[in-house]
Length: 157
Image (cartoon, rainbow, N blue to C red; front, side, top):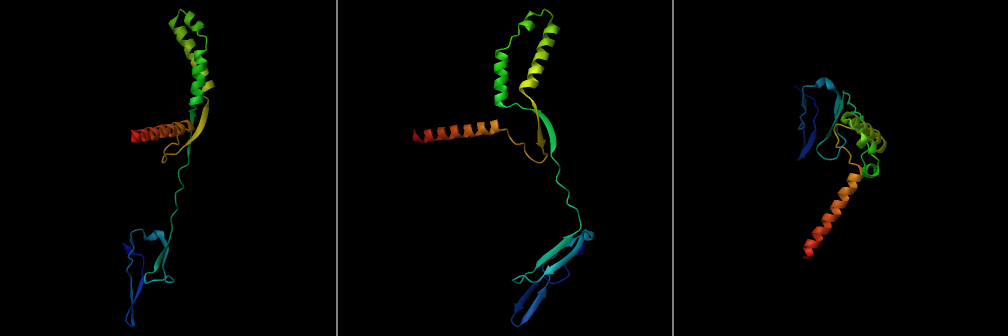
């Protein structure tokens, strides 16, 4: 362990005498990481500031990972529901082979799924909470407004 600061860091006047002391103790076992250390004496007051120059690289923050997801917005879900409600499934109903009917339904749903819920790329960061969609934020605001209305009506009763 090495004491980094070797100069005095405080000057006090007692009567006609000045006392000099090192009251800031910085001890490290990574002495090689310190390129330079000094005491800045041009500060007002009796305590001086310390200045360190360290020799190390700051790791860049992790980059955002790009993730491909499907866009499940409320508008896309409603459009998909409307399409399904108006779709003709007679060819699937007419099939007497269960495997064939399942295959037709599967291909129909997969095709329409990729049409109504297109893929989009989002940025994902390990250290941050995912940003909610605008639909989710709107739903939160609506719930908050309804809750305030409910509370205000309870106070009136």
